[in-house]
Image (cartoon, rainbow, N blue to C red; front, side, top):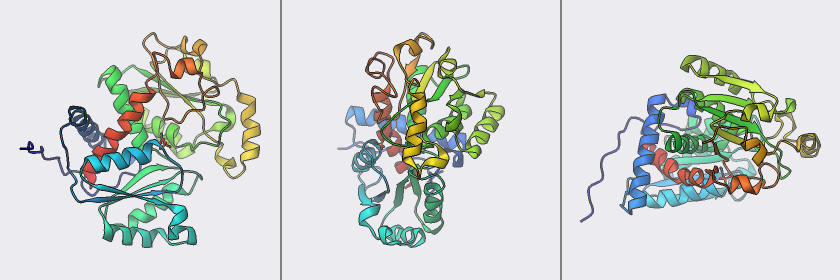
Length: 333
Ligand code: CP
């Protein structure tokens, strides 16, 4: 006989998850607690079909490995079906409106998840237009402003390492050089806006051209002030790494140049020395950890000996994408 599933609270049932800022600390705590419980059940092989016969639509305007697969596998494990849609093979490519899509997909299923992250000023507003029309929760699989599933998994990973009380711990969120493509700004923005609310002191480091969106920096400053944590911006990777407990060096693009990749690439070449290497890791605290949302440009953003070394937590971090995706789906759908 299968054991009866413990009922989940319904306090965020039907709620969109577009930015972590839209959720209170209490609601995010519930998501983390649920993710932890689902992780234990998954590890023990205990069935946890909280969403039998439900459907989540996964609407992608960009490529993905972790996000798509954590949602698809997670939905299956919850007893639901995740339905993949590419923007290029749907009528969105012919200009179908976000409003019509929100109304129609709401009538077919139980949540609409969207990744629309490539152009500053577009993805978040697109999702909010879908959400205005939808009658089911809209889940942000990464936009131009936030990557709320990634940073939730990051917070879960940091707590697994250091415990729930993160007061006095420092995270260095740093730009790093990568030649592959102009990566979205949403991960660093998601980190600087979420972590000060959960006790971490945040140092953001970037070359002068790589400023984050003003609204997100202002939010981070306010969140730090309200929560008794620190938020500081420096233009030096070494300074950010000094005495850090967590380092999160990754590349992102220049807000005004996402439409001009050649000019952006030329500027980035000035900063090839912004790499996470063993010398820089030595500047951090003894028990510090290295994190990256992945994919990483190995040999550019980070050397192999760090990403594959004892301080790296990139694989537990990627694994936690599964548990956090499941938690948000199970609680909201
Ligand atoms: N970190 C992350 O979102 O990975 P994908 O782009 O592969 O989904």
